[in-house]
Image (cartoon, rainbow, N blue to C red):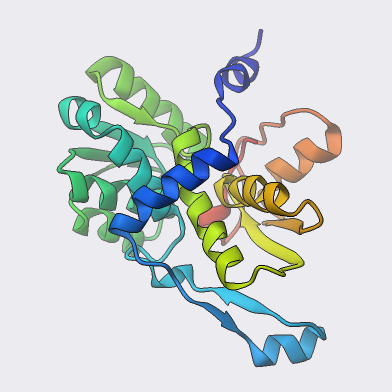
Amino acid sequence: MSWCCVVVSRFRIPTFRDVCVARRIVSRYLKPTPLVYSRKASRILGCDVYFKLENLQPVRAFKVRGGVYYMYRMREEAARRGVVTASTGNHAQSIAYAGSLFGVDVKIVMPHGVPQIKIEAVKDLGAEVIIHGSYFEESRMFAERLAEEKGYLFVHSINEPLLYEGVGSMHLEVLEELPDVDVVINPLGGGSGVASGCIVYKTVDPSIMVFAVQAEGAPAFYESWRRGELVDLGRVSTRAEGLAAGRA
């Protein structure tokens, strides 16, 4: 059995109820973000367009919802063992921010070439940054080795259900403000935003269409969908380093 198959078999698929439970916790620490109507985008596209302003979150990204919920649920074990993860940016800041909330020691492994501004942002949140690897997958494997050798709690940026459940709170907020939404478009990097959206929208109204947009230079999920099997692209190339996932 391949490594990918082992990971998939262990993944607990979150439910709509899980997301609703997470939302109650997330709302204690993070305020709802605005859903704003864009007159210009609506005129250009010929339909009503709204933007969910997750850039107003403390780390300027929706991933902080997952980080906060994960750290809340794992706070006792995380405080005892410390946490390590790998990221090119947004997930790193999410876990670092959550660690600062709950008094958890956090180490982030990032690949060479990550913008210095992202490295400094993670450090400013109190986490230790370790630079290792030329691309994300090398950083992830190194972080897993650190966890095994040092006893840290490893947070997988993709295969961790608690992250999806926390992120799903964003989509519940959308439905509360715009219950008649027809289409939702999400960027696709690791998949927590899109997958949690599918859980929420397809449960409430299966007719809601969810689209995932992936960087052309990092199309791991697209290629996996097209080929009908999990694809590991290894090194990827895109200026959108926050979406640079080489493995589905």
